[in-house]
Image (spheres, rainbow, N blue to C red):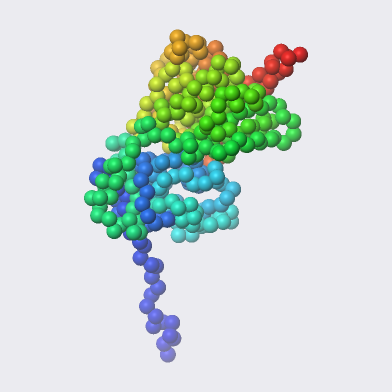
Length: 399
């Protein structure tokens, strides 16, 4: 006798909803809707990290961008609150090849798809991300859009027109979007060894944690903070964080940094902060063809010769010759000499600056990368040393 169950048709997964990714050069990739439904426009960039997709999503430096994961399988370990690098997901859109159907980790609190939906991030899966990455490498980062749900009722020619009408990244600023609204004071456990004023240009949580672990009190400040308000805190050092957009558009923050240099307060900047130090010294910045985004970038410290594997997320770089000492050109060279301290070994991009006549240094990569690697974390030791020395010198003057 045949059981009722044997007469049922085989179960099938629901057919995925369609989605499109359209590039400004007319390329159309057809895939499946992933995350929220709708339309999102942004600069399409790729990241080469094999791990840390949640840290990527919550990195404010990706504001305004559609991120393509070159790793083929994404979402395997789900998502959780602990691994968020900041207060929310910042990517404009998300593109993957194979989206995992399950979250296989005891730490998972939700699936990656649920995180994207809850964060209103429109994504696409089941596309050839290898082809897309090669296209972006050949042509450079392109404007693009992801479209799903009701957005697909619009003709593809009109969707392409929307993509081409959006602003380019050159001249773009997202600082008002990513920075905190009000100052916050973070206290280390135990003795306060020094105080740092950290300007939030799109800061990740690992940066203040790195400072707190070294006994530094952190005044986390909005990007719009004035020099008067910053110096009123009597900081022993100033920190400029990573962040999104074109450094040429951050004129207010460049002037703030010049005030810090004039005051002789030690300075450390990472990523966007490195670019702003370059501009404060009088050098130009320029847009890279397709940028550096990933966790496997080799960078050499030119003073020691040591090579570190580092995390990157930047589309702009400082324009400065690698060899020799240079007089900072701003205002007749009043900031003295500067040298390129670090260089990217893949393409000789400037990866760090060191002022020889001011207590200021910066790196282009992310030494505090929570997703790893951690080769460059001792740079925060240097920040602590400068801050503690400045504190001691200030106390000596007062006594």
